Image 1 (cartoon, each protein chain N blue to C red):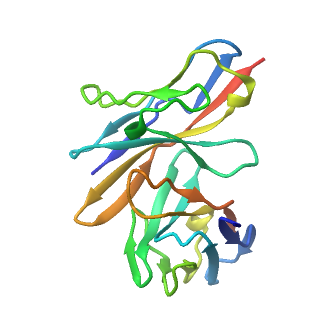
Image 2 (spheres, helix red, strand yellow):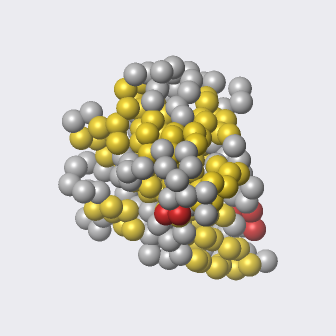
Amino acid sequence: AQRVTQPEKLLSVFKGAPVELKCNYSYSGSPELFWYVQYSRQRLQLLLRHISRESIKGFTADLNKGETSFHLKKPFAQEEDSAMYYCALRSSNFGNEKLTFGTGTRLTIIP
Amino acid sequence: NAGVTQTPKFQVLKTGQSMTLQCAQDMNHEYMSWYRQDPGMGLRLIHYSVGAGITDQGEVPNGYNVSRSTTEDFPLRLLSAAPSQTSVYFCASSVRVGEDSPLHFGNGTRLTVT
């Protein structure tokens, strides 16, 4: 069975400081990982996915298969980064598709 | 494009009552799914559908029924509401299942069962 662990429920960071939101996963197959974000009063939306290796809003995330991690990083936090962040793992087994979410981390940027 | 539309936004039920949470998308997405969000639990998959006429169970399907008679609609039915079903429910859809098909979420339905 797949599992996604986000060890920090809450994270507070000063504006301009680096941000790292941790995500670890367990999955026997080849993982596909995503970060979703929910800003205040907005819908949950995709932030980035590991397969595209892109940087969105200054955030990056590298899949580390050895450590089974997909931590989300940003070198300089901005106030608008305050939001709820969810790490998610896509699994596919005999045609059954599932997206498993972690419990989320609420990031607060302190001005 | 309205995207994914969920109704109602809020609902209060008494134990034993039944109701249907509506979800509609106008993006011609093949894949639709229902999640519930509980404090400290993240989002848990209830049911999903990879196309019209096809549904399957997710992680927490008990107490819920779904059907997918059209591509656009994916209603979630609570047959006999229980206090344990108090939660925020999210419907999500994607073009198809796959890593290049991100989920589009609705605004959620906050359900309270007393």
